[in-house]
View 1 (cartoon, rainbow, N blue to C red):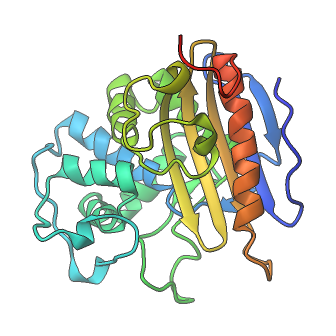
View 2 (tube, rainbow, N blue to C red; view 1 turned 90 degrees about the vertical axis):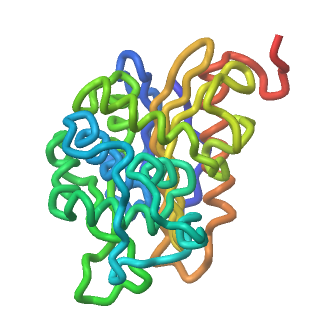
Length: 277
């Protein structure tokens, strides 16, 4: 078992850490509390894209279309590219690597919003989903959030991906391959001390990370699968402070890194500064 560190009480937290092999819960805090999860729901989009690629109804080299009504900026690289005529595979890779909003919207348009919304329920989840396109502005007539979820269900998603149980081993492997490129190690994963730009293969202390993060002005969320020489942990750490008058990102990030350090120690069995043999 893992004892969680003290958490800022002004924040709504939802946390669960599970052994990736047995599914045993190692630590948790309000794991069934539903949070707004920013970009985390894009995992379900990637699952739908991977499922269609494996079924042959999409091809890796198909080109995406970007409808004008779904053009967005902010997170990602595609909106800054001169040539945006990229393939389905590369669009999914951009979502996994830099949480690309424009590539996300193009892939949702390709698959259909209702079909993407149905992915989480198809996996048995009731309180977690990708709910909407990414929008420049979210007016009252639109869905309340693009993505929501609980740590209980999100940690289970990562466990099932690692076990090859998210629809099929081939679908799971595709999604994990896209997530391997994630460059955002600013949250829980900051404690793993990995190279943010190059951790596809085993890196510091023999750790291999597959994860997805989500970030908005009132939320930080990190869900992942960390394998080490001693153990493997599927984790979900979500923090919301939407109703707070203060910006609580500093204590939230401190808390997430503290949780990450416990995960790192558990999967490696080594001190933080201990170098590879």
